[in-house]
Length: 396
Image (cartoon, rainbow, N blue to C red; front, side, top):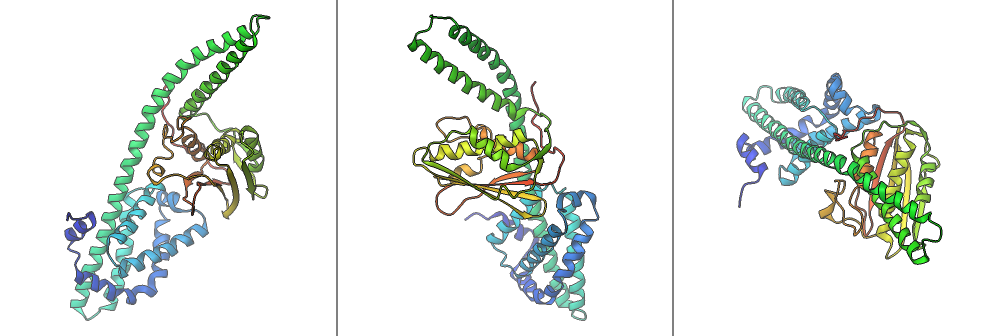
């Protein structure tokens, strides 16, 4: 059986069962110092502007991070150092990518922990040179392993992000060219339809029916072009105080649904206003509602939207439906342009939703629910933020 990456890393640094025993023995000695080390750690880290911008989210957020660090240190010294431990640590590296933490801050952060823990080791094993040597060696190896894991997953996810940006850039250039070219023939068709419909007595009932069908299809084509172009445009947000309950009601009017599909909302009325672009936020609700309704068209079912403020300054919206949900194989690519499982549609709704929310300083994630159905969790800041989206280069 081939060696796993974690096994290779442990072999490379010489992490052995003796080191595991040394860490387990060290754990009860230093555990009571974890709260103090966590305070020192974040006090030092937050002195640096770049790290503070990535990590700081108010006193409550810093307090949460200190608690998380204590759990991290507890696992660091108690193990077990197996593949589950490796996967858990990989998630930390991926989180660093998501919050755009500069890579070099990880080295400084690890050095703070190394210094604080080594000081405790020196004090605990004063006068015991053999135990001191073993404990220091084990601590150095496990911290080196932690750094190697973080850097590996950081690089892995960063490359994935860069590949996504490159795909979006190519997509933007292609869409910009094709979208503008399609507008011209669609405009000619619309003009011709208008002229034909306006000729008195020249259009019988059967012909009028076909002209209406052509008109409907032209409208669909125009909307697809508009969605494509919206994916690459950098239109400035028209910021104003937006009440999400009003935006939701407007979206409900725009989405047709059969009587077998019921929609319920809770908590929207009590939300404070959001500073954002009402038209674009309406598009977020429209796209999500259309997806949910289409998933329920054949069987019927329910769609619910629940709003809350889980922490100061943040609105959280959870949209759920009772449909079939999203398979595991699709989830990873759910927000990629042109990714769709529907018979109609070209896979632009969710990418556009994510783009709009990111431009508002928010986010969207798919969160599997127990049993059947899809669940999307949207987060929006209740205070103004700069338009910090990652633009897709436009071809015109």
